[in-house]
Amino acid sequence: MNLFSEKRILTVTQLTSLIRGLLEENFEHLWVEGEVSNLATPSSGHLYFTLKDAGAAIRCVMFRGAVSALKFRLADGMKLILRGRMSVYDQRGDYQLIAEYLEPQGVGALQLAFQQLKERLAKEGLFAEARKQAIPSLPSVVGIVTSPTGAAIHDILNVIGRRYANLQILISPVRVQGEGAAVEIASAISDLNSYPGIDVIIVARGGGSIEDLWAFNEEVVARAIAASKLPVISAIGHEVDYTIADLAADLRAPTPSAAAELVVNSKAQMMADCASLERRLVLAVQRSLSDASSKLEILRLSVKDPEILIERFMQRLDDLQQRAEASLSEVINRGRQRTDSALNSLAFNSPLVKIRKMESTLENLSLRCAASVRSGLELSHSCLAASSGRLEALSPLAVLQRGYAAVSLKLSGKSVRSVCQLAEFEKIDIRFVDGLAECEVTSIKKRVPYRLDSEFSEF
Image 1 (tube, rainbow, N blue to C red):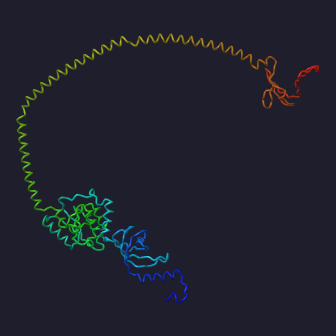
Image 2 (image 1 turned 90 degrees about the horizontal axis):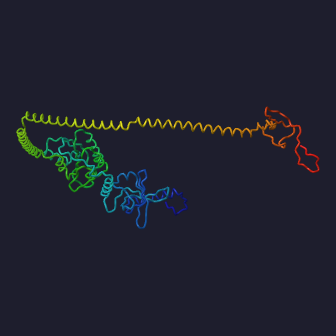
Image 3 (image 1 turned 135 degrees about the vertical axis):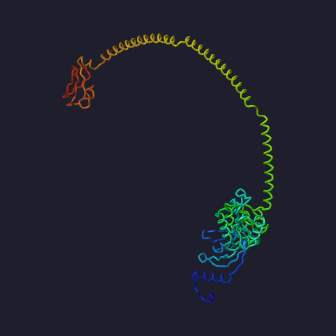
């Protein structure tokens, strides 16, 4: 279809769909290198980032299915080689790379994943020496986690059979490489922890490449080893191979055979050691019995006749009794002397004398107090009589007895001191010395000042 030969109007969706089809058909398999920036890791599990170099940048997306196969953690600034295909995100009209595979530039993906996991678990303390358990010196049952058909189990069984054939062995068969091997190994370690009687666990595998050994670099295996209540010996690969499981284990053996030698001692060597210990024990017991016999003889010679010892103690007892009696008599005499002295002092300072003196003083004080009270009462009576006379002279009743009267308003009870306070027909009370008269004002006459032309002053 030729879009430019005729005038055909496209919608934005149609145009975007055409562009997406062109890109996906012509850029189906690409290898691109660049630096990661603007990394986003939403809860969906997809990865969104920008791949850039000095001259350009392109948006990239890696969907959850491809992310689950990654062996390392993506980070901003990391240089990558990306395999993917071109596409268009319709809603924004942006072209983008859909990543299907990523590998770090300059270092292998597995090696980078190993370093990242090692650093993260080390920060959590899974490799700390403080949490590692001691390996029992003489286990009775050994659990082994390995492939039942691999060379590692044959090496371990040969060494244990040669060194201590009586040792019980419990094998938990697992796959030691490939998809799902790590989960099987972790489950086997957990299962052996729940089996009664096991003293130590060996996790073993023969040598191989880093890909072959990768199951022992998985986080689930490291955490299963760290969570084990039983001590774990790792024997993975050859002497130069190091895995995350080796770092998490309580003891690392360079090879499976070495692990078997570490977990059990040689039976012949143990029997020789026991014989040597038996000889040393017999010699020590004989020496101890000889020393005890010599000490007993010395004690027997040093023991005296009991009768002599008893006589000596009896004499000592009599001497102590005499000294005690003499000391007791002396104490009694000193006590009597102190008692007599105290009695004399008490008689000289008898409280009866002081009591008599205090009684005499008390009697004098009582007489003086009574006289003082009578004098005060008489003075108070005199002052009261004088005050009563003055009060009587100023009493309003005395004024009323001389013929005067007190006037007050009937309604309010206020005293009337001037005719200006009165009004005609107002009711008033006139108080006399012997009673009260209720009156009504019929007329009011006010006093006027005296004038020369007046014949008299009117009241």
